[in-house]
Amino acid sequence: MIIHYADDTVSSPTVISLTDYGAQPDSLEDTQTAMQLAIEAAARISGPVVLDCPPGCYHFYPEVAVRAPYYISNTASEVENPDVTRTIGILLKGIHNLTLEGNGSLFVFHGKQTLLLLDSCTHVDIRNLHMDYAQPTVVEMTIVECGNDYFDVSVHPDSRYALSNGKLNWIGENWRFEEGPMQVYDPIRDTTWRIENWVEQTLHIEEIRPMLLRFYCDVHPSVVIGSILQTRDGVRDQVGVFIVESSDIRFIDVGMHFMHGLGMVGQFSHNLTFQRVDLSPRCETGRSVAGFADFIHLSGCRGKVRIEGSRFIGAQDDAINVHGTYLRIVGRPAANILKVRFMHAQTYGLQAFYPGDELDFIRGGSLTVYGSNRINSVEILNPRELLLTLVHPVPEGIGEHDVIENVTWTPEVEIVDNYFARIPTRGILVTTRRKVLIADNIFERMTMSAILIAVDAESWYESGQVEDVTITGNRFIECGSSEHPVIRIAPENSVVDEKMPVHRNITIEHNRFEISNLDAIILSAKSTRTLVFKHNEIIAADRRGSLASLDESIQLIACSEVDIADNSYLRGPMAGRNE
Image: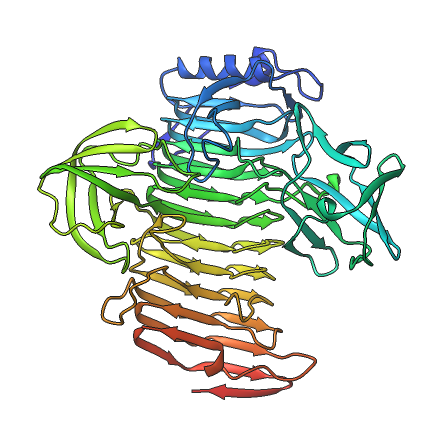
């Protein structure tokens, strides 16, 4: 067997089999101990290793799973989840030159678990493997009947409940919840969007028969028979995959069919590849949900991130989010020392800076850079606050809301040839100053913007002005509205001045926009310098009439050096041409 690693070396690896350590495929036996023993054996072998999993179905139960504390970006606050101990199905820690070869196997996880965690690993490939939950923590029910003051739902076989005195609790393997966010899925249009939780608003619930529930309302319910309701609790206490302080990690031909909490999270890691990753429910389950929140969420990474040939179908939040984290400056004990703080409730406890890292000083109001420096040492005061000793004195005039950004940990990003559907929010969010290529993707009926380039220092504190973005060859199918432009460039700067742009050098060309919403905005941009929108094809038609002109479908605020030209604009059955 020949394995090609990300560092371009070619070696003949040592092959070990998971079954040699006690795993029993196609049984209900727990694979946890066998996997731990196999990983320990692989770590003792010098040189590249293939951990081979013979084809079959393997179960992972939480009772003997590894438990360890990890702070993970964008997950849960101290109030939501005071204990950051994660239940880890498969832990790879300090592992190098390993291929986990699944041979098409299915790993089924029970309870709430972080499926896979890579900590301080290098050159690890995860290949030909499918992962799923035995009982997903997003429950599903299909509307099957509607009356004047009630509607009936058929509960999915993988969802369980307890009903007492008209109160409904959803229950699983060592978990339970009553209230939480809800979405509705329309299987006819293959579209998902967020709604108020109808279950919480009903007057009374009764069981007609097992797995068939009736919800009584005080008004005629505006429901559609055949629609699927999805609901969950709101706490991201686990994630699907966590990659931390690791490098050259690749997921190739992998299916992630349900992930509890946040999805595949990369944090302060270098060179991450996601190639032909299937993030969608397995067809045989009849489910409509594959993700509790985002699918791929990368925070503070560097090197190259490449996401290629993958499917993003059935999330509860964004498909892809790539960003850094602003920390607010809260003290200056000495000329070259800063005290900084994590501000957002769901992000804290991260390393955030390492000796030698470069940082920028950012104005909280304008989101513009006014100084740079380099880290000499880092002291973690508590999970919220760090003390940074810098190589040079800090600049004068630090504002009350000013922040710093770690510019060393900013990645180059390529998102190419992927398919996005059944996403209730955004397809791609990206904020990094290095080169970004978003090419040859298909976005189908995103409920919000297909692509969002934001950045803020007051809400999520997700950092990174962009300086080189190309969006080309993509197809946008029925995305966009007046509230959510198809492509939105929206830095959250309160000081808006054309002479002080936040973002730069964004080129949008050779894309196809298929618009059916009469008031859809194709492009909205704010505080951007050097913005190109050229050679795009806009198919704009609606049964009720033609859409607005292209000029009316583009909104610009405080932008400069804008080039909008040579775009084909088709309205109704007749072809037209716009500038």
